[in-house]
Length: 372
Image (cartoon, rainbow, N blue to C red; front, side):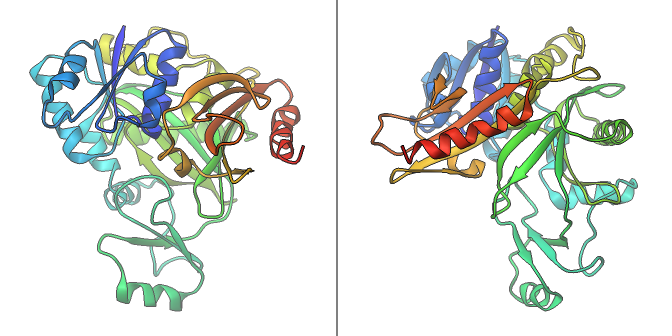
């Protein structure tokens, strides 16, 4: 099967890895000839799909399945139009995405349907967090520690920003795939963030009581039903000690978490999404629920001026074309733009095993290697 992945940054990198893992032939399209995922795809076509440039149109029409891996509204609309014109199966739900891309629309959905979520200012207690309404990730997110800071923010705020109570506690993510009346959820992952609220590590599985895991799955399925999802959506929550409160939902292929799910449970979310899109049903047993799972840690690191540091996923957006490596700097698998020992690099490091401590201690080997 040939899958055409449109967008070669964070989501595209994830999709190329998953395609390789399940034996799909990956065709990547991106306007940037140096986009990170270009080094991971089986075939790469650089060009402007919106303008229907010949090279990218040839690649598009050669695919069996179309997978958008970007958040560009104009490009997404073009992909939907081209998929219809050329009768190409599309692994994307534009109607569900239209709701989930807006935090205002999705928060309204939560509130109207009794889904637990952070309260909007002036409800709740300080501190508060500022988020742009559109987009995902940590871009534009900042913390306001007092009500006075919130009032000052409102006097000069950007149009569309929202302010919610800042909740403390671990964050978790779960994916849901399917169509109305038939959804599956998968292994829960923990989202670890850096000082600017950007995800720098994903680990799976998580230590949560079985009842809380079931509740998380039930919330995800309820949200999928509410948006009439036909495809994939991820749901991120924070456990503030009272309940699992939904932070955001995104109806598109996510980054970072699917690889951790694959290593932990054996479930390839791209394969699941392809089956639902092409055949209207799941074709494999769901091994994500129950039983012992392998512990996996997915991390981002960069080397700058000889110093290796753990960073949020934002560092990978501007990486050079990535290559897949095994046993690089002691990591089991890596996707990196490493060139030579003297040069700076960025990379995604993936490790797994039965022993959680051994997997997490791997980073000490990496961080200490710069002192040898």
